[in-house]
Image (cartoon, rainbow, N blue to C red; front, side, top):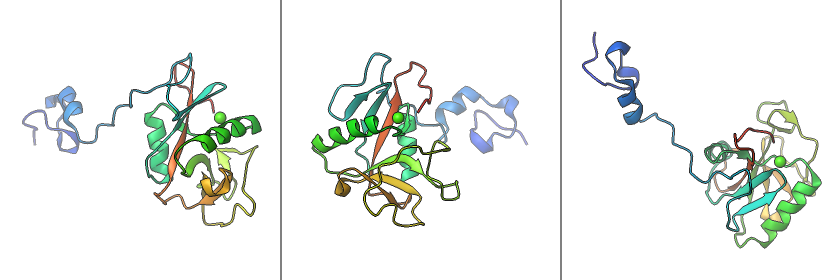
Amino acid sequence: MFSSGPVCGAKCCNTSLCNTESCSHSSPTTATPPIPTHASANGCQTGNNWIDFGNSCYLIGARNLNWIDSQSYCNQNGGFLARIDTQAENDYIKAHLKSYPVQASYWIGLNKIRTNGVWTNTNTPAKYTDWAPGQPQSGADDCVVAAHYFGWAWGDYGCHMSNTHQLCEIPKTPSGALIG
Ligand SMILES: [Ca+2]
């Protein structure tokens, strides 16, 4: 059976007859292009929803999304859910969040989704944590929020919950390499 023209996706059964460029432009599965707010090598975007610290910029997200969709949102912005690995990094971020006008909780990258209970950042066991007193509380909750009700200290939380904003970390390197 032959394709009659630039039919896209799984329907394109004879690739020699497919106009792949046309397909790529019309396919509903085409990935959403990055949001053009990528931080430069010289600094971060301006606005109080951006934090500039060390070799990273941090975008204070304002979307109510679950953990994995928040990770995707950060990926689209050239980064990842914040990997907070030092006291200095955490102190700087918390100070900014405390003065930020939105009283929200934020997903960060720390999780134990596939690690047999070990809290990890990008598959590496976490060396720094800022658990609120009594946290982590539930063995079933595999994701972590910097929670406004804990003064932005950390609590474990169900990854599927979608009532939480997101804190993205975006490396300042021109390539956007994921350096944590
Ligand atoms: Ca970091």
